[in-house]
Amino acid sequence: MIQHNATLVLGAGQLGMAVLRNLAPRVAKGRLSVLLRASTIASTDPDKQRDLAELRALGVGLVEGDLAQQSPEALAATFRRHDTVVSCTGFVGGPGVQRKIARAALDSGVKRYVPWQFGVDYDVIGRGSPQDLFDEQLDVRDLLRAQRATEWIIISTGMFTSFLFDPAFGVIDLAANTVHALGSLDNAVTLTTAEDIGALTAEILCAQPRIANQVVHVAGDTVTYREVADALDRLLDRNVTRRELPVPELMRALAAEPGDAMRKYRAVFAQGRGVAWDKARTFNAARGIAVCSVEQWLREHRDDIRSARS
Image (cartoon, rainbow, N blue to C red; front, side, top):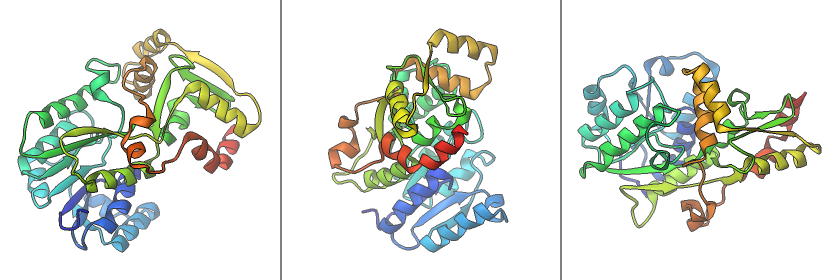
């Protein structure tokens, strides 16, 4: 339990809300807060208002701040009032912001920091990958590993399950009844839902013996693109077209549009390094924690998938 630790979550997007929902029962009243922009707190947008109402009902305090605009010193002053900081911001604010947040966390003297590393295994991918933002993630790891004052936990989750099926990613094209396999049909990808990441993050923070200064791998599922296509065949009761996108083809596409974020991601995942790991060797498998498989996710989103085909 982390009952008596003041815990600050950075951001209340899809992942931030999942983390907050799972931490709220484990943190003493008044000790769990979320950092939000002033514009978010004052927003009249119905979706934001709904989330704010849920946060207040959970007893989560609202802390005003702007990760992209504030100086490292200002962020450190905010972080300093907490024992644990969990960053759920995504690649907010563009290049340099993840380094700034990590530096602020270390300068604040916070006892424990969980950076935004909820994704692939950047150590395995290495520097110089097609997605240049990944080099900054390695910079953050270097900062954390070079010091001893602040404990850190990196949680590697693979791709968010929903992202694989996002039309903007260009892998699952249900309108065209096609699966585009990145690299090859036998390339694998690890997938975890945001809801499972939120639950597992809370479990990792509360784990005994205490987890510190290590990379923890979790996984909802690890599947090949062929297996994804087969699952769609079963769900839709028909055969989807399978098309492989080899690495050279994706690198040529990226060279034509070097600033396109999705082309960067597709090229990285096609290379197949650091984007998949054995589910049997994960934190959730070791603890016997149930998670959502691809088959289960597809069943739960069956209606959305069928409507996307029409």
